[in-house]
Amino acid sequence: MLIKKVKKMKKIIIVSAFLLTFFASNSFAHAPAGVDLSYDLENQVLKVTVKHVTQAVRKHYIRKIEVIKNDEKPIDLYLYWQKDNAVITEEIKVKAEVGDILNVSASCKQGGSTTASLTVEEIVEEGKEKAQEPATEEQKGSE
Image (cartoon, rainbow, N blue to C red; front, side):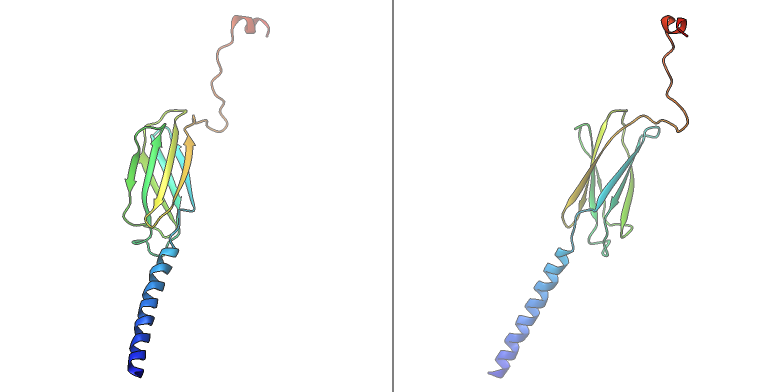
């Protein structure tokens, strides 16, 4: 009788340990903490920086980065592990013009996603002003 109770107790402990391990590993899954975007208009490159902390870079990582320009067909980049345990930086070729809107979504393999948007703007170098239109004859006369 005592042996049966010991065997039953062992089974309960093994099953409990398995369930605890399974649920605990899934409870650490989380969406990316943030997505930062910058666009290089001259080279037509979108730089995507995703903040996603993980200790298991081959099991818990950013699985997909999706880029949508002006509600067009998405550009999908699939990843198969995370090179760094805190941040991912990818440069993606995207042809865009001033005024285009780029929507980016980063999705975790174990669940959750984070999105960010960027409107492409004209590059203005510091210290330089945009070219002004030539003065009209009327403006020249009043100077």
